[in-house]
Length: 169
Image 1: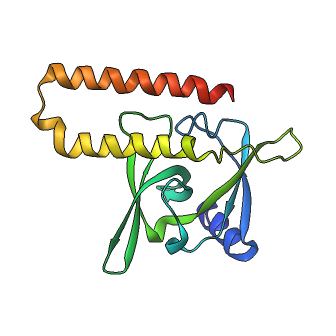
Image 2: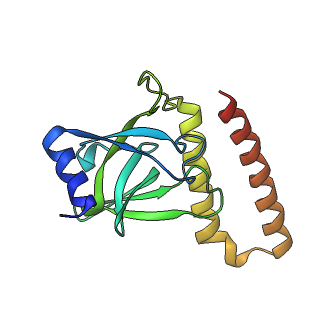
């Protein structure tokens, strides 16, 4: 049994699993040296702005849901890392879903959940992801290079300002 199967089995058997987190794609929401709780959840219960854990190749990945697709009863989730203003879009199929991350804390702390549940914070990242999806799908190929560069710089600057504000709080 590989590590993904062990995580899946633990979530099914116990309703949740606690794992160390590493990576930069979800900064500042999730940071290296944090511990996250992945809880069992029905795919139909996942909402936009939730952070889900899923199988990506032979690893457990975690990203924010920015869009939910339903097709003939099958559900898939369009996800994006909070620290990826330009890119990082993935489609997660229902079969790859492991659970929802609903708690994050530092291992050396008292276990207090520091996952930011501020709706403005969460919706900012969803909005940024949706803007990128629109840009990627509709505008990228039909826009003059100068306007593309201007918009990329503008969004990048807004993103950096927001990252600075959110990492202080």
